[in-house]
Length: 310
Image (cartoon, rainbow, N blue to C red):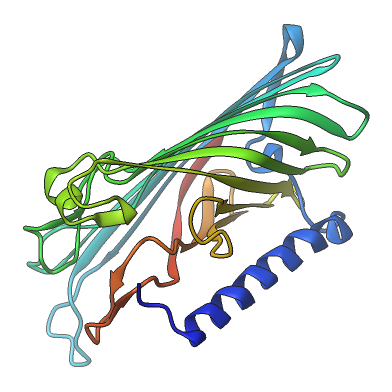
C-alpha cells in the first residue's frame, strides 16, 4: 500500500485538529446552535415525538456573448432534503434522520456533470444510564443515487448506487451532558462496505477484495454532532465520524467530517455552504501525477436559492 511519512503525518495532524475542534465545541456553545436549529421543529407531537425538516434548492447561471475577457455559458442546480423524527420519554431517547443531496452542472456544450450526490440515513436509540449518559445502539446507511465519473470521461463509472454503500451497526454510550452536543462512543462496531457493481468490484474499488462485493470490518467508532441556530437568520451544524478497524491497521483511523451553514437573506432566499472531508486508508486514489495511494478527499458546495423549514 502506498503510504509515506508525509501522508501519515498529515493524517495525524488532520485527526488532532478535528478532535481538538470537537472537544472545544462545548466552550463555544453560546455562539453556536443545534440540529434542531437548522431543522427547526414546527410542532411537538403527542407521546414525546418531535419532527421537522428542511428543503433547499439553489441555482446559478452564466451567459456570455462576444465577451472580450472570455467565459463559458453554464447552468447549475443543487437540492437538499433533510428530515428528522425524534422521540424522548422518561428513560428512552430515539433519534432518526435522513439527508439527501443532489446537484448537476452543465458548461457550454460539455456533458452534464454531477456536483453533489448523498444519501444518509441514521437511527439511534438509547436507554438512560444517568443524567448525562445513555446506553445506545446506532445504525447508519450512506450511499449515493446516480453514477459518478472521472470527468470529462463519462463512459467509465468510478462510483454508482450502492457502489459504494456503507452500513454501520454500533453499540456504545451516548453523552448528552452539553446542550445541542451528542458524543457517541462505541467500542463494538461492525461496518460493511458494499460495492454492487461488477466492474468496480473486479477492480477492488473502495477497499473490497477484487471480485468481492462486500468488505466487513470490526472496530471502534466515535460519532460527534453539534447543531444550532445562532440566531433566526444563521444556523450551523457539524458531525464527525471516526472509525478504527481492530482487524487491520487499527492505527489508521477513517475520517468523515461534514459541516453546513445556512444564512437566510430573506424569508425564502438562503445562502448555504457545506463541506465534507474524507479519509479512508483503504480507498486508493490516483492523483494527477499518476501516483496511487490513500488521499484526503474534500468537497465544498456553495449555493444561493430557496429554502423552507417545517
